[in-house]
Image 1 (tube, rainbow, N blue to C red):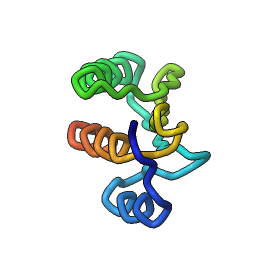
Image 2 (tube, rainbow, N blue to C red):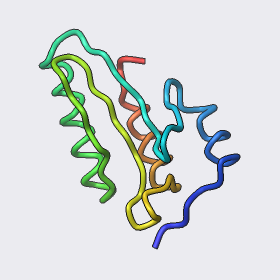
Image 3 (cartoon, rainbow, N blue to C red):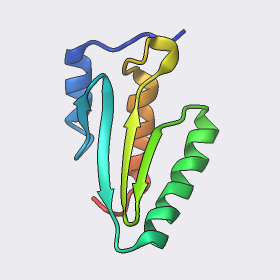
Length: 97
């Protein structure tokens, strides 16, 4: 079972995660792409990384806009180190900062 992070730890992590917010017990970020194909390409990369790390985001996609939400179900749907790490990984390959 994963351990939820306290607010101070989450706030510190957000300092290095440009555009990510802590809302409703989730790490959340929206991305806007040039077109649907670019958004879907990004989502494909997110899917491969999420599967590799066995940690899957909530995904909302409308045309060229993608919103990702991260929290950990086995920690009471709170933010854990798993969520921070997946956000870092996503930022590593995110070309739309």
